[in-house]
Length: 315
Length: 255
Image (cartoon, rainbow over all chains, first blue to last red; front, side):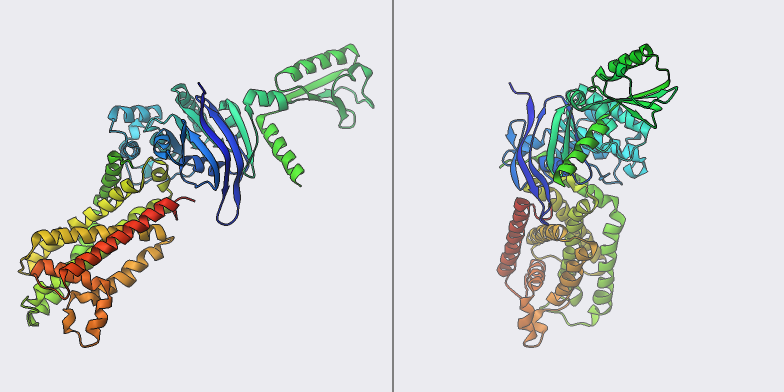
């Protein structure tokens, strides 16, 4: 049995002004995963989410969720999908618990106080249940939106920029909460500007730009394929050319011969091992050094590299 | 076609809650305005006017005043009901839910119509403080008020979707509905108008609504109740068709 719960084929959206927000997007989402959709502003992330959630009418293409075509069997499919929008859009005068209970009823489910309490407690909102949403902090308002999306027990949850404008501490709390949702079996698709967020949470990553999916892969596979290690070795004495002892390494001489720069590896730790060998080779050749600065490329580096490469190809 | 009662009930309940939240201004303002009409046109001026068709003037104006409030409040309530979620962005929840046109209409329009019926009952109750009147066909009156409230709730719903700013939201009730209701025989019978204005007045569709309601109150009206009823039902059908079209195409709802 296929574990694909969302299948998007050739999805295109051209807005009335002629802007092509999505261009033949193909995407498959597997049950139980956290999928991060990365892309610069205007890349088409929110349009893609909107098309699946019924906010945007696709120009062409097909979306199948839980085996149901969204064009014809939208009721059954939408009942299993939740959406947390990017904007803090909710009736600010409504008390928290009432707002969450409304969302549950809107999706056709019977009232269930125990379930509402469970959702509110899981998001640390239970103590605020009788407060008007307008009285809450920005982070809490965002959690209310998550609670509203969780109220009808969705199997697939879209989080559009879930931690935008949220401070670092609260962002980490929300990551833990999103992780807990996944543990309960919810499949999560999130868009984010914070690459760190995708790096921390996602199983798979998709990169979108100008309405086209540039790449979709397992995060670890993507890091292995496109990742790099960079090490800067500060020499005790400058040199004019690289010695033969280290010519087999991908190194270059920089900063007027006072630094050796290593760029290599594959994002799986191979680079670090090679840097260790490099230092041994330097020691063996009698070359003294006074410091080493080493870092692995992040998903952000890969993302920026991919997007910039695409821009270069387009130019 | 399936219908989700729980979804419709949730929307209905929430809309009524919004109404009750602002009940003071929602109820007090129209009741105060109508009371002023009763005092000025009924008690003060009405006592010096001749009865119209055998109905004392202060009683004659009750259906017209009721219609004036009903049309304005129903249209405004309904248009605000759907415009505000569009304006604030909260409509995303409705659009992403397994909710179709039927549930949406029952929820939003049903709530707007209910609010209007509550207002109508309060206004009629208020009228008894100033005027001595009886309703000839109470059941017909109730049905007709419900029909008008439903039709103009649908109309308001269309306005709320059409409007892309607050100015547009207020234009139709203020600049079209209110003047047409005033000129539609609220304070006079159409046959009191000189020729050709009595004929021209029949081009005003609101005149048929006022006339229809007046028939349910006093058993007599400017035009036949059948025509008034037919026109109201026709208007209701047109509004339903327009809303069905809006949901089918997603006009102003889905990008």
